[in-house]
Image 1 (cartoon, rainbow, N blue to C red):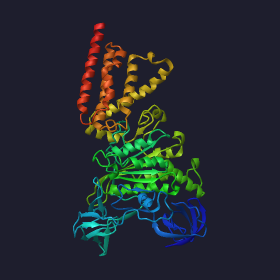
Image 2 (image 1 turned 45 degrees about the vertical axis):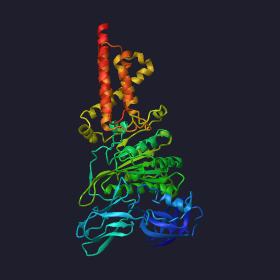
Image 3 (image 1 turned 90 degrees about the vertical axis):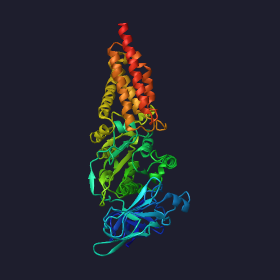
Image 4 (image 1 turned 120 degrees about the vertical axis):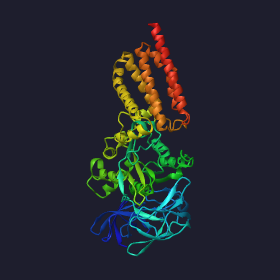
Length: 591
């Protein structure tokens, strides 16, 4: 261990000398309270340390001790249903020890060392194992089976494997390596947060991440293993969109990182998530969720670490063969932490004071997402999807964090406060948003749902674009100046917006829509448009076409139960065509 002395204290930045033998990103203990910190810059024997706790009262001359190890997370059964802070300290345990206010210097293990878990072996004595192989399983929650993996760097022959109940630090297996040495393997392992976990092969993203949100799945889909950004101003519904993604996405594990957001917002998450039901199992959503809470009133340096802590835990579950979603709220606050530390380090500022390496740090985070073949002789296919909220000041996405994010991610769900003020949720602007995964995932929709899925989606986007152009004319001369066909386009666009894109997160029937129901609902709107156009061309008055009862039925169709929607939609389509035929017949008789 290296010992040094504090020479400068500037908020969360501490400079210490006498640490020539320490390395970048080593964890250190600072001062008499043994505050936890991390070395972020070395100049000779002087180390710049970002301290993850309040530094008030710390003075020059205080002792600094290097642990010689990088900032790491503990990986073992017991992570699910937990609420950690930015450096994986269990907040519930800290509350029991220190009360509602966390004391400085409290050193507690991230995971429970006393609890025993039932370990069931998956290998036998004499089996050859390699990194990533499953040694055994633990039923961590009723939803998730925790797979204990052979750690990276360990391979050989199993000489001992035990079944029964053990703590995470007890040895469950012994592996003899090729050089004859034996390695004891507990269920607990650690991994440095700033280093991505290895995998065998990275696969192209070709399967969509089904979220049940019509605007996302049909219009701007994200692939499993993809990266997406949700930029939007205050009040545009970022948090509700993220809750919907956490609740309904077809992933096995959710890692929710509250990074620098207001404490009351994170409190809402902590209260709501245990009450939310996992739609696939009916159990509490927390049974497959890890929460990382690092709010705006917590130490700013830990905010920077929280993103890496979350994605490392996500990679660990990915290596078990699970599909994982990382939801970070928000990367803007994380970037502000980078800016503050960069300023205290007296680095040359970039645009708007952010450090010049902002883009590369964002890329390091998002590029750890992906669909992969894991290590191990079995080579499981798994994915890690990263979804980051961006909170640009005043909703201005031309600012550096938004622009740097857009250069990295391939899905942009741009939230619009004008849509939010009109109570159109999710307030994703269909004219600004995009998905670069569209061509990759649409073959899956065409093959799995319906061959016309992409065709219907492109038709709807074209109608919305036409509506935007026609709005310019309407604003100048009024809607009566439009031709009947253009008025129908405006009416159909309104139906797409209100009956399809708009979705009520608080309605049991409308909160989730399966891909099949999404296709049928949009196909119903398209059929209505085509049939209405046929009636207008046959001489029917547009006012009577727009007033059809079938149009109202389509508006109510999204509130249909998932189980029996096909019969309901078939009935609506049948009534629609009957009404259209009556209108055409009446028009012909009148002429």
